[in-house]
Image (cartoon, rainbow, N blue to C red):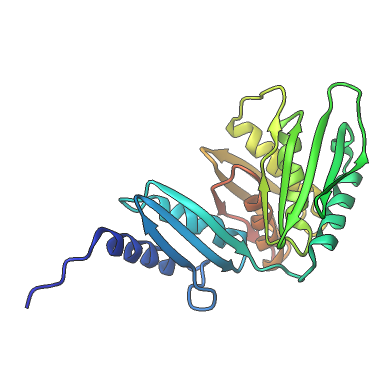
Length: 246
């Protein structure tokens, strides 16, 4: 009896599903990822457990032969369910309180109306425009540095109700990115997190892969440090080598 020959579509979907099921940080049984494939484009949709599962799903899928592009419709299960207005207010508050963003005007899109929260005109200055739809935070307009862009994105991710953060802000003037820039941003984020001792963590980056070395006081702190790195814009993979202090 001949083995049925899979179509290109079925082969791709089978290989992507198998890759996701092999990854222990992606729980396909508890939170299955819905997939569709057409003309080289793979669509991933669903609600995954955490940001690592979201980013790993895309990284594992894009290397499957035949996948030329991905439409990302994956969202993260929030730690607390919040309405869009409450999420918008929370993002506003954390951005207003961040000292490194004081040179940025802050504008909110609320129910179709643009609301100016802070106006900055002294150069160099940026403009951060925030909107929220179904728990997804969109950051738009421009900032004056890559670290600002990355930090604003992480602060939005840290809001308990956020299901996803789309960081569409430009950097003006344009600034070249590098491994050192990415590692610097991760270090800043770790030091900002009150639940992580960033002083005990060494961060290196190479081609969008961040490695964490050092130690953590507990297994939950080790995991929190890893998630902090995953939240940073431009990080595609995190290698967590932190040891838990006994």
